[in-house]
Image (cartoon, rainbow, N blue to C red; front, side):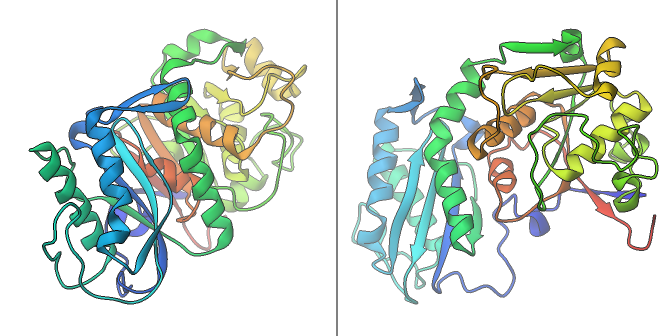
Length: 355
């Protein structure tokens, strides 16, 4: 069976808990997210996928660009000021100590760490605005390789467009029972641990002809059942599961939903297909399955950008969130860094030796 664990930021890197033993003043590349207090949209508005900065947003942008002037050991990579948060990649090129507060000549502590840079940036913006706009602390993620760096760069670059679609655009194309969208949603997401696919729900990934998780990959790896998708906090099994069903683990959950007649909504990272596999068609006929997408039918294959939007929309719409697998440096970790604290997030853990 699958254990359920509360989302632990020290393990899953959602919050700004530092990695034990890591030298944050040493060379490295860091993805930093800084939130406005209460997620107030102080820094501007997204218009047609582009940020229109307010005066406060212009101040934040200026202070961010000034960071290297006060911390000579750091350079800026991709960054963006969003309405209620800031994303940026900081590159520490060499070990160092000292630094000054942005907008001042006053020293900022003794170490040129990521923490001191963020603290100096926040103080500079606060001084310019006359009051602090900031949520306490910040989120950080260590970028360990070129692939992760490119993924984060793309996420930052696409953030305004994704914000615009998420808040002002809704899926336009539907197949199945639309009334399912009125049910309380449990999101199920898992990082992709390998393998590809075209993102069509109900493909035979279970090894049993698409008839469900029994004897298939879902049971071999997690012995997933509908009850296993509960969070252990007194909640019953989900009334409706929402996912892109893109990664192998997400498809295992789809097998469970189809086998145990749990309603499911798939948010497609491509256009609606001309046909659905038989298990999905049966679920649609029974009013237990809905596929939705904002993309035209001509969009045949998923992309990383569309997959990120898909997961972001799922996180936005769901009341509860269950994570099956999380790659710390992956796109899903980036999306969770943006998640509002009010939503409960739980992680399914595998019991070794179980089958």
